[in-house]
Amino acid sequence: MLIYCVEDDNGICNMMVYTLNASGFEAKGFPDGEAFRAAAEKRMPDLVILDIMLPGEDGLSILAKLRAQPATASLPVIMATAKGTEYDKVVGLDAGADDYLAKPFGMMEMVSRVRAVLRRTAPQNPGNVRTVGELEMNCAEHTVRVGGERAALTLKEYELLKLLMENPGQVFSRDRILSVIWESDYVGETRTVDVHIATLRTKLRQCGDYIETVRGVGYRFMKNDGKGSRA
Image (cartoon, one colour):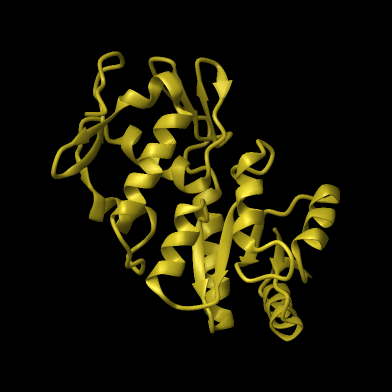
């Protein structure tokens, strides 16, 4: 697995690359977005650790561009926040990051989070295709199609849709979704869930209504395939 570390502090970057290489990964470091993009054009990584505070273009801008391109829309990204505040974490996650690291972070914590994100990225049910109306999820290919056209989902959006599709009719509270998708160590605002649901519905186009809002509780995936409501 190839990991790219985008970090302008040379000492921190070298330590990250060294630890990842020692942990069985192939890792490379880059001081800014320009160097990272040049490398990604030649060889796409399996995961990116992206610092928010960078010289020139900041990490959030780089993340936005990654998510806007079909080829990198689902690329796992862990944001490194300059501060350990809840605001920084929420901003990164709402922007499409798959996880975060609050500085100063330990190298073993970094490796653990990298492994956790990569585990979630790997297909869990090879050959299993779920189809509801015009919506198709292929777990082997880790893809989602709407009306035959591929929907460019982030890892979190994919996991959120998978959770709901695997449990049709079951209502999930926002807190439960945070716990399952962002794992139990994430403490943040439930609006993060609402933001991801809204974005997911938009990307699912005509199938967005398959995800129903249960007022005062949370969300569920409809049991049938034609009369959902976002209400």
